[in-house]
Length: 314
Length: 240
Image 1 (cartoon, rainbow over the protein chains, first blue to last red):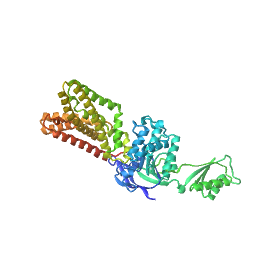
Image 2: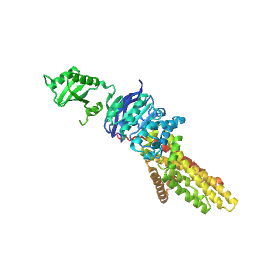
Image 3: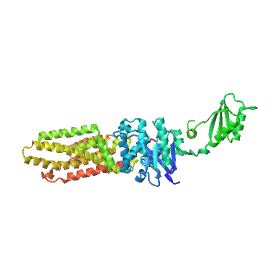
Image 4: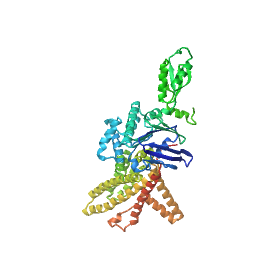
């Protein structure tokens, strides 16, 4: 794979250097990859996105998008962007707005009406909503229209800043489906979001940014190497035949390649190496006659990134 | 120039009730005064004022609101954005000023008692029509330039401050008998007001090419200022 986005030694300060927003950030996003950027407020995520879009001039380092500068018009012709603070031209109707962006994106005039209708339909805005002034849109409708404009022309590079902020559950499902479809279509997608579960669902890799630096990177879907703590709830009153419950659980865990951590009835906690390890552990517990009624990871991998990050409150 | 930006800006301005009301306040009384006075003199300068009405906030309002981010995420150069805004504001101002002039000239001609007077109206109208073009686009460039400097409608405040500042400077320079400073302040006022007379085109006096050159250079300066400022502007709501 070739790197669609290359960031090298990127530094950016505000207020004449008083605020360091990015500190020598380097990363690569491969073509077709969906990258999530997560981190606490003020970590530098939006600044990073601003540099990727060519809106901000770095103090040091640089960004290349498909080998070009981020503000190169050829790059922008194949870029879609959904900002966090979505401010649209409120005096236009939704349909006019999409037509306007279709023209700005230099997409074929002959396809304008068809493309706009298709985009509106895709995000679930009906004809009445499409012809209504944007000033009368709800937050969720604005977000849907924003996503529709970002997806116009099936961009190769897609930047989404808090895409599901203010979106209802049906909208979240829709957004997830559209993002996944675009990813399947080969687009390189960068998502900046606080919605960790959504990031975990749609992204193939996640970078955790804190204090302007990339603290860690995680491969999400191929995350087998990521250990986790599994909480297993047992039916009340269970006692193994001829022995102590904790000893029996430790024995079964060891057979499955996992580690028993503690038993605080009715919950037992185990460390597993990966998803397959969790499956093996559960199979071993059930085969060993342990009455498992529930099993859940204690926290998502991404939540753990926050928890385990240097300087985190926990 | 970007056609989509040009058309969108025209549409936005044409559907703004406040701007339309202000434009009506400029054009309608002018027509009435021309009709009653039998002279087109009252219509001079209206293109400049209309350019201020339609151009105010051309860039600053979009910078403040955050709309520009989505525009510049598209393959749009900042200079083409500036030129589109300027051209749209200027065109709207000139078009309305021409409509005002046509209506005023028709009413003056209708009240004229002889064919010779009607001919005189036409002779006075066409230099004024040209004046509207030069002045409308020049002041559109001035307000677009100021709009790149200030957010929201800060350009109007800058414009008013500029006029008042230059007037005060001129008064002080006159008082202190600083001829050079007085001349500078006078030129600044002329630039900001788009002072221009092309009546000499109708053979009413010697040519004043300096005025024309000054208006053209004002246009170029205003646009250059807007392009330079906008090219240097960082677009982000990031705080860190």
